[in-house]
Image (cartoon, rainbow, N blue to C red; front, side):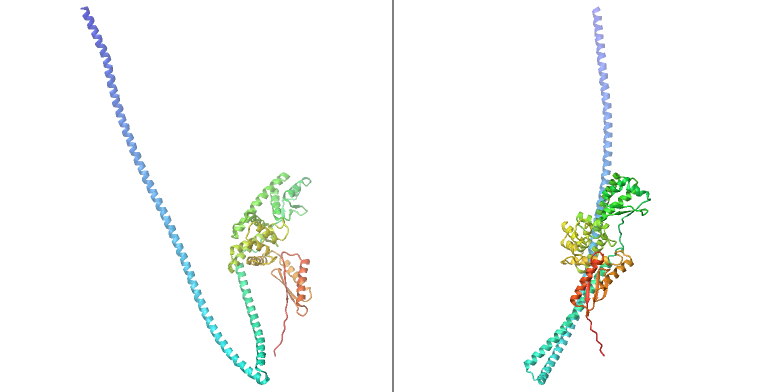
Length: 527
């Protein structure tokens, strides 16, 4: 009985143990299944959300792509319209060009018709002339026959002798008539050439309207008070010595109130000194180191200004492709004057006039403007080299690769050598127009009249001179001598003596051309 109870208790324990082990496992399994179900449901929900967001993103991207496509379509449409407008403008431009060409052809046709009419008129006149000449030949033949018979009857000469005498008489008459006809046509051609040349010069001058006065450089510097003179001089003259050494000029400080004079042969150094002195006076700190600093800064600024001025002058004259050194020399001409006429403005004016004259006679206007702009380039360096500015300028231009026409124009625009190029003649004419027109070179009326009177009085002092006239602002003298008191040889001597007197007794820029005219006149009264 006890064993049975023990066995029953053991069985009960085992069952209890089994129950205790199986029930948690079952509960764990149920819990896992339940959690797995919950996770699956969350995953499905999250997948649906991801799919929804993806669909929204796809819709958004689709709308953006549609918008981009619309923008591209609009852009392509705008570009197409722009290209279409451009093509239309080109077509309109071509139509206008064709219209202009058609008008030009119509004008040429009209001119040809006019010329045909002129030719027809000329042919009619020639036919009339030929008929008239034929009639005159017939009359001359009759007169010759009559003269031959008369001479034979009166003189009793043989036919051969009479023929020879008649031919000699006719030869003499024909020589006289042909000489008079040649002189008549020469005078008419000279008048036509003078009129054409005068018309071309007037047209060229009218097409270029320049200022009648030019700027001039100054060599005086205003100071606020006389105390500033002492500061400029410095202790024992160290400031003025430092300034003169740095600039290469002479500073003149005298008793003149409120003014300091800067003197230098080189106009650029003089301008550097003037600007630097003004800056030092405005700054107030005047000592050697500051002077050297200001002078160096001023020199750099002026060099940039010179280069910029040369470029602007070349651009204004429409001349391109110049060497940098030539442009620099061109800018330096701004600080060079001749009788108060600024040489740079004079060069630009000569360029325009020469170009206009070249266009009038059918030459290259661009090359003529280049010759005119650079004809006085030697004046920018004539203080650095020996010789006149034409030779210096020609050497510089040849060195920097300018065309032969430009070099020859610079060397020969003052008739210093034989003229081989038509552009040299154009530049010389434009140079004379620019220099001699009223107001180009500032000079008081009294001084101008006095100079003209001096020229005329010196020329009138010589024996045989009846009248003397100064023309072209004193650049040329016309002297009339008496034919009774002088011969051709003595007239040449008078011309040379007048030139020597001008060279010895007068100071003048450039050259003075002296022309001596000797004329014989015979006057009779027909009663």
